[in-house]
Amino acid sequence: MIRRLVPLLALLALAACARPAAAPAARSELNFSILSAESQQSAQADWQPFLDDMAKALGLKVNAFYGTNYTGLIEAMRFRQTDLGWFTNQSGLEAVRRSGGEVFARSVNPSGVDGYEGVIIVRRGSGLTLDKLLKCDKTIDFGMGDAKSTSGTLAPMTYLFAPRGIDPAECFRTVKSANHEANLIAVGAGMLAASTNNTASMDRMAMLDTDIARRTLKSVEIIWRSPRIPEDPLIWRKDLDPKLKARIAAFMFNYGVGDSADAVRQRAILARIQTLPFKRADNSHLLPVREMEATEQLIVARKKGDTPAAAKAQAALDQIAREKAALR
Image (cartoon, rainbow, N blue to C red; front, side, top):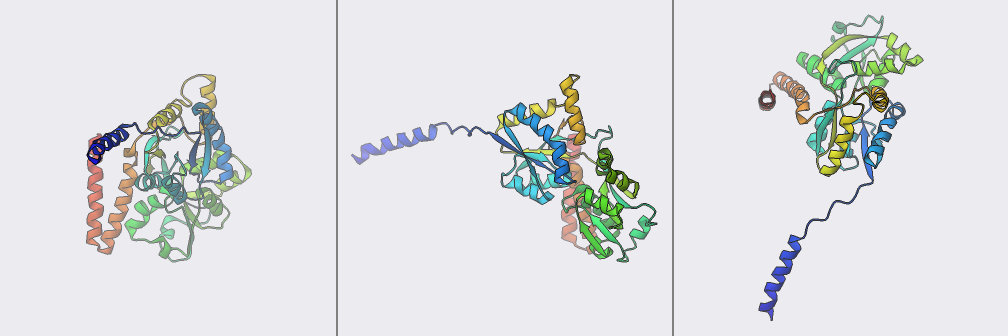
């Protein structure tokens, strides 16, 4: 009896293995993370019309996920609390590395100039110059962006502070971390002597055209600019259903395209979030920020005499150069 049962059980096991995998459960909602350098209230007013159009096109409820900082949005994708979203280059790189994300689109500067610049701003008429700022006499209250901010932290560290061996924490009296809008207003009001920011955030402040926006912009001036930084990436989770990805892509890359009345309406909505119609992209979009990151690490390692760290950073730069050459 046992000998007769063994083949039968084997056949049943094979039949079970041959069954097709259960289809993914139909989704009713999509969670879109918003990486805003301004207040949530301001971001919500600008983004909701776009999200409403996405919901209508996809036939899904699209929820906005507003994070209080960059790390929160990276972790939200990592733990599948969000499905896709708008990131900065630096935070997007972390989302790809740690959260199972991949770049699928990028924003497009409405000015027609591709990219934006990190800047350092001071109160107009204060007499604070870049040379005075870099004296590092611990008399200046300085503002920086989130640790994962490309223009607010990575760019000034890579292009300004690290090459001079400057640690902002040791250079200034205080270093306060905040979003771009808060830092801009703080410098304009004289609460900070100087701060990092970026040209896109300042353009956004001008677009608001409120009393406080006009007063703030008249009260500040730029004393340093970084090399141009690529526009921001949009990232979705790699493990999203391919059919859903295709539907999202169809919406994203047709939104605001064409001459119809609806396309004109959609471009007005895109203008509020500071982009022209989105362009296709992939993880190669992050090569410049990887290069900035490795460059900063190499400079710091060499100044410390850390040979292994310098070799690791140089190896990263060599790999980036190979990837760029392959794209060409």
